[in-house]
Length: 149
Image (cartoon, rainbow, N blue to C red; front, side, top):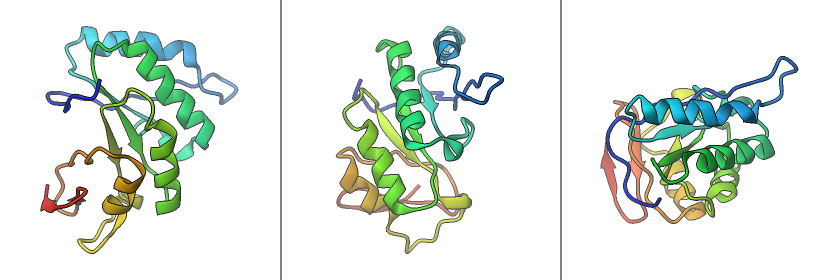
């Protein structure tokens, strides 16, 4: 589903088992519940989903499980929240061949200056323009233009 996401797109939590591993069996019921409740999509692997605590393989598998659970009924946005541009690019590359609608690249520790190059660098990892978040400190860079969100 590569359509531009619109509407209410809530962040998902990542379900964990008691041993600290991701409980992938609980992704399907959460996706079904979100869609049934009227959300227009979902964001997986971002800050609400503790994406910063997941290793790259866990992150990839979580986004894949979410896309599979959505079954094309609603767009999935892959959240990226990591401490380096290198890791942001790596995560973008891990999901670029999945059926995700967009990337949600959260600034490191929620701090982002207007001179940051993260958006343009991440665009190199994933061909779609990033969706903007509303924030007075966030600037989005597409492949060719810059605009305030």
